[in-house]
Length: 305
Figure 1 (cartoon, one colour):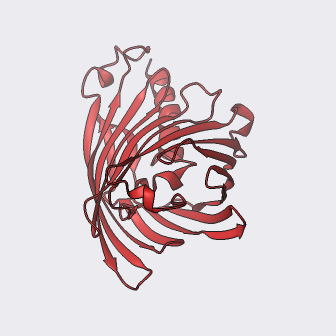
Figure 2: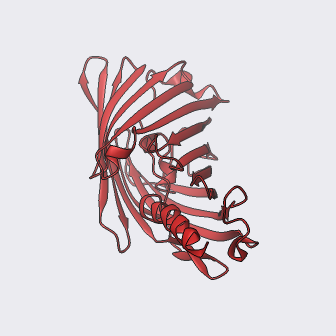
């Protein structure tokens, strides 16, 4: 019984701590506040909201599944709030749930006629829980109670942007911590450091291109990065490709259904050691802008970041 317990815990939590220290997204460009709390849409009168669902490594039982509900709320020209709720689930026999609730505060300063610098702070809680009720370990004393834990989360970031360029550095979780249940270590959270950058330029008539990148450094772990190239065609269709270092090639597509409603999809072609055991990863996002002040009527093309 103990051996089986140890094996199940090892499989679940090695996957959790190695691959999912923070939930990862292929379409991070639609909700960059998950990476940088200083991110600002800088669109007074527009409340940008979204729903995202990611199913990773399809074909592997218990592979990670992530749901994200978010909103960016400009309070004034200098202050913007963002709210994120994330549910990250991994495991089959022993489901492991992480629930993140975070609020970001961004303060925007003007440094030139074109450029703005935003300072961001993140505060929230992470709730970690295990549900062994449907497994053979439910009767083990180690899982008889105390199957949940709650942690404080603090983050910070800087975000520099113009109408066609952005760059930022951040750490959305400054407080490293360990989670254990009755003395059994089950998760380890390490500080993450992110760097992001992107540039939008006109390629040909009715086509804009946006090369972008995100670099992630988890303390005591190898550096990793995503390189992306997205195109916006006739202000309606988005097509793109991305590469996640040693992990996946990614195809991205988006469609502006209306001026304020958008849908996006991505598919990850795995190239990691798990490539022979899964059928790739799917991610879908739905975005909607609540335009209370008819702000979008003053713009001829949608924002591309």
